[in-house]
Length: 239
Image (cartoon, rainbow, N blue to C red; front, side, top):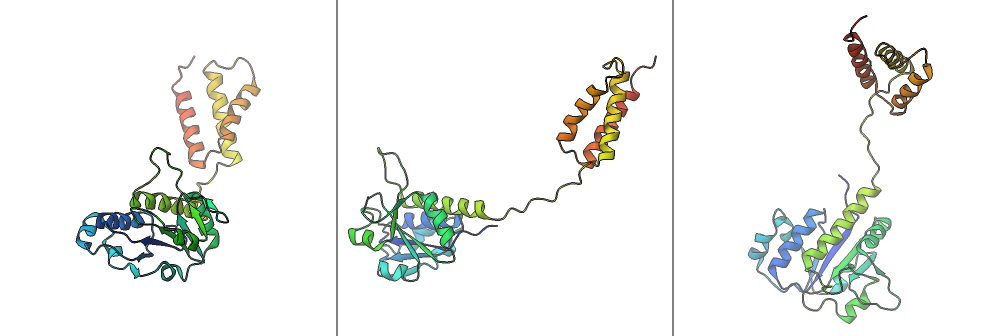
């Protein structure tokens, strides 16, 4: 299983316990387990736990801090989620954030989410190195906190999986030239006795066999083809 890059989710002033529980579940869905909460606005963890299906352990260990500075002090890159355009700050998509977070590893990236009502304050936007926004429809641009976390979590997970070295399953042994030659011979005999070939017409057999060669048959597949052709030939009526 491929791990996501080192990312800390930072929540500013969350007030709704259901949002908190849903956020924990979204993090768990995509392998995120590092989060900090700045100025926690609710202590109704019982309500949060009812929503945090299979992610209750995350609710037991958030880093509770009083300032954004404290939450991101050990992070190398701080990205604020905001649709604002601010001079000197890039505005990245979630996919772009994920790819860059992967490239910056092992440096830690912080993704900062503002409060449910007003998002990031001006000084919090200034504190972030870059900004990121989900390209949602202009008719309804804002997303629920957990929904936004799902989008970023998915992007991080997908980027990690795409960058992971592939571990291909062991390949079955390829058919040998001799086995393919035997298959071509069996094909020719069947076509000749079945009346498809009139005279030598060796090129027809060669061309048909070439399609099987291009398919890169395994040894087991070549044996199966050979057996099938010879079985059908044996059932042909004899003159």
